[in-house]
Amino acid sequence: MAKRPRRNHSPAFKAKVALAALKGEKTLAELAQQFDVHPNQITQWKAQLLEGAAGVFGGGGGEAAAVSVDLKSLHAKIGELTLENDFLEGALTKAGLLSAKR
Image (cartoon, rainbow, N blue to C red; front, top):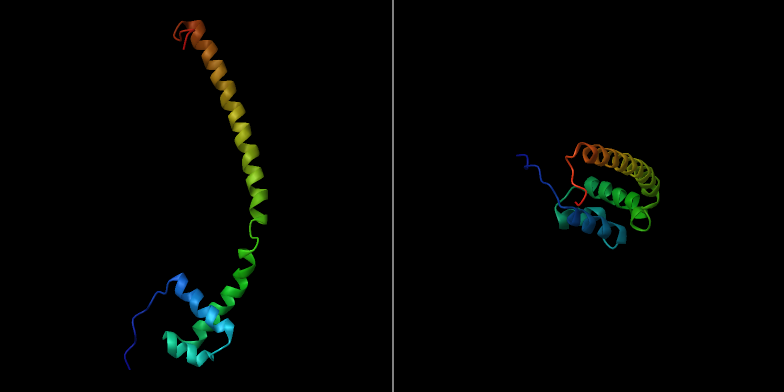
């Protein structure tokens, strides 16, 4: 018996098979034959779908805290750069290298 080459299934195909398994209209063996995949693979995809289903309805809660930390550091960097620009503008104006008119 020759081995079949490794196949990569698209996420859409995996979702389609997992949803068909969740419906329960056909057995795993029937679905495996219909979609030409192993029944264990269908079981794994079904479990992944159930684990990730909660993220569809509100997975953005954990990212908000990370964004606020980034905003604080970005505001601090903006303040530093503004001070540096003001200092350099004053120094260059005194040296006569920067015209007052910009």
